Image (cartoon, rainbow, N blue to C red):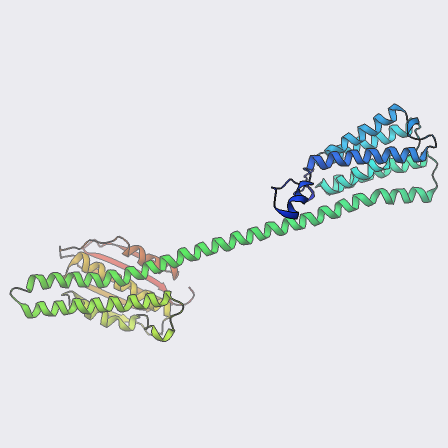
Length: 400
């Protein structure tokens, strides 16, 4: 029902140097503040009652001191039990009036009403407590025979500390909400940054895999051919070694391009164009130099978005690289690229008749599928019933 706010508490802080240390020395914990308030209210009430009675403090009965003490002690729980503290104070005031003691211990009710307004979260409970306090104050003043103007003034003065407490609570709640929102936004920014970093790492990993795996596979196969032919066919071995050199240069060029993209200070004029389907014939020619037999059926009529064009090229490149790795130089592959119904259909199949294999990283199919999913498409990869392997992708051309 009540919830003390940290902003209203005075806390002990670690000792600092200079003036800050001296200020911290005088700070009290919340309980110390409540005890100090109770003592001050008790002393002010005693002085107020004595001022309204010509006989002075010495003539205040012991029961009167006890009533003031009970109301003051209750104020020690003004933060956590505000309505209950107000109830004790109201009973004390009614008892004071019933016993016919002079004056009115008004400071108790002012302190407890401020606590109700400040620490009670539920507005209905806070208003009900205020109404009860106004009823008791009005009853006491009417019983004392005060004029109407004094009664109205008393009710307004009684309402004022409750209103101040309510305003302080409202401001504290707004500050707490602002802090929570700031913390949420900071968490959201950090989460988005982590997600962006993860996406960037995945994209870089895909590019590195496509660049390195394809060219290194070509180099490995050609180097193996050169090793086998160097003894009895030096001319063909030299051609294979030349293909290795070309594949290495292409790998270095694409790696330079990728590293240039990662360096923001690199000017755009130093970067070469990203590969696209228009360079598909060149890719197939390079692979045919390894001994692979590749057929191509392409029917792409419209100009593709840049990312669709790049991802389609990379998927075909990776699929053919897998054929080269696991099918060897004698593998036969068929590539089909068709545009239909607002999508790009890609299919790469192989006969699976060769037996020579190279070890794979296991990331090729994962990378191809990630590229398709990024575009909002699909990718299927697996063995064919009639033998061999098939990679089939469908990439949307329009909305991604």
